[in-house]
Amino acid sequence: MSRWRGLSRWRGMPRWKRILFTLLTVGAVTACAVFAWSALRRPDTCTDGIERIDGECIGVDGEGYDFGTPEIRDVARAIARENKRIEGQPYVTVAMMLPLQSDRAELRRQMRSDLQGAYLGQRQANEGEGEPPRIRLVLANPGRNYAHQEQIVDTLLRMADAPEDRLRAVTGFNLSLDATEEAVGRLTEHKVPVLASRISGDGIANKDSADGMAKLRFPGLARIIPTNHDAAQALANFNGERGRENVRTVLVYDKRPDAYNESLAKAFGGIEEQGPPGPAPMSFESPSIDEPGSTGNQFTQIANNICDSEADTVYFAGRTLHLRIFALKLAQVGCKDRHYTIVSGSDAASLRQAMTKKDWEQLRGEDGHAKVTVQYAAPAHPDAWTTELARWTRRWDAEHDREPTDEELPQYLTEPKAALDTLKKRIETTRGEGVRLGSTPNLEDSRTMLVYDGLLTIGKALHQAQQGTAETVPGREDVGRQWSLLQSRHRVPGTSGLICLTSGGNPYDKPAAIVELDPAEQGHGNLKFVGLGWPTDRAQPKNCVIPSSTP
Image 1 (cartoon, rainbow, N blue to C red):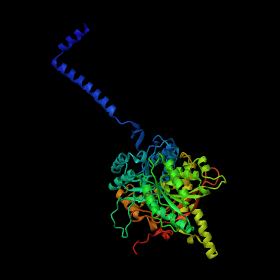
Image 2: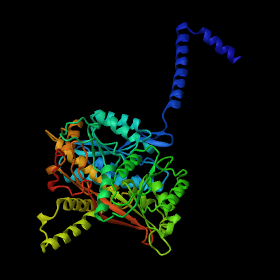
Image 3: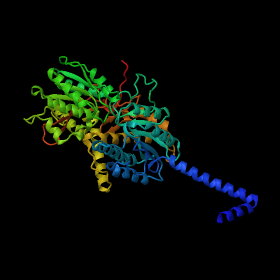
């Protein structure tokens, strides 16, 4: 009965009311449908502005978000507080781009070391120069192996154009991968300056020319770490000086396409050995940077082959995960009680963090002596400058029968030592302020030192590019043009060594800290600084004046 009553009311309505009612009903239904469809299509987010893609939190943030990694929570919040502190002052934005999530605890600790260096460098750049512009630091997570770098680069390019962001440099970049190269290429193509503090692959670098007029592949790219070629040359020069003429070497390299592995294998293969020839190079193939796959079985075969040869030194062109497995397999073979030295590149700086107490025990023989020692060219080491200054002074005393004056001490040692002292004071100041960084920075793995140096280098370029009033921040091309001017009087005293950039934005004759991991010491092994290696086989010149390469 009520249905007929409702129908009669509908028929009794004026025509215009029935049309209006129908339109409102259809509109409401349509709005609900559109809302439901948009809700279904709305991106899954980890937090505001950070999208969840394939289980990872991808995006850019400067508000203290930890990207789901508890180890970096404190330091991400410290960066956010510094960003808040400089609000209202002339500033530019610098992005720290590197993967910020991992299932492996040692990789999460490495991320923390990188970000600790970024925060400490941000603080020092903001306060040390005492002039604007300040640095607002943001974290950019491109995902594992930079798989989502394209989306991050899109965001950074928008930030470079946005007047509220004023992105003027991108740093970070801790892996020499094809995806990393694509990101650097696209950023520099759009005139966004890039400072690579921790990629050593030869493929992500500009070639220097004698007259400085050559077209740069990555205009606006600067690096503060030697390439694999330079690091390998520094290793060869160092070991040549130590009388390694009688060693027999063999190259073991990863065939998986990887810019770091490829350039390191090429660099090691190009070293002219003074001793007798060793066996032919031996290859393995890993599935990825952070997966072992069948490498254990491959290494057993390689270790047996090395055992049957007379080689005692192995040049290893591979990543840290596989280096650890190879070292353990080589020790297990235990051929004729022979001691092996494995020589590798800068990625090996992470090896100690990946080793367990049981691993170190396996690398030791029953007599407590090392079966395998790992030597690598670290980008930096906190003991380098004090140790080398003491050696230099002893040689001076022997030649001159007196102590050197401050003016006679070499700048390439004293200035980096002073920079390291400043970093240590900055760490103490941070602790005194109650700022938590998740842990006390571990300088031995070189990550904190390298990233810190990178922020200082960016800060110097920003201040030198600054023109006009304090409120007028430099343009991105102005910043990029500063890289090649950071030499001679404008050199950057870094904790990792003097940073003097060439016309291609490369560090000139940057020293490598030759480090040995010796398992003979009980516990977790001994990380020992043994000396400096120079790519040119000689120390940087006075005032770091880059010589002409023309004859």
